[in-house]
Length: 143
Ligand code: CMP
Image (cartoon, rainbow, N blue to C red; front, side):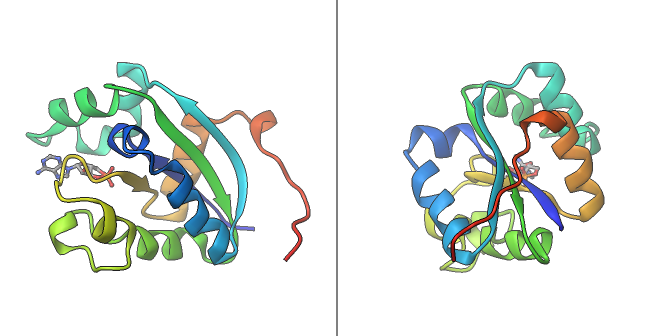
């Protein structure tokens, strides 16, 4: 079964958006496989966002993502990587459609509430950064 990594950023945690965002994924029908509230070290943040290390906003991005706890999650389900990205919406909240998470909850590019893996390969890499195998749960859900 496909899995993706989803992370509510410090702005989303501070604005009490954990519940509403988790609800969207639950109501869609995906299965929560792992979750934790954690403050990232600079090293973990730099590893997670390594592909952006040469970008001018990298320092700002690392400072922001380490500024408070994030809510790290693994969600499982058919086509969850692509569907979660659709539910999250465009990276720039100004371009995110209403009805998407960023379209409904965010205004600024740097504080865009949530991150979701952009491919199955990224998801596997990112899940491995944040979760050990024994932190993942497999269980049957009532529909
Ligand atoms: P995310 O999906 O977490 O992946 C990388 C993040 O970098 C992105 O969301 C944005 O929050 C952030 N980002 C992208 N472009 C910029 C930018 N020009 N200035 C500041 N932050 C940016």
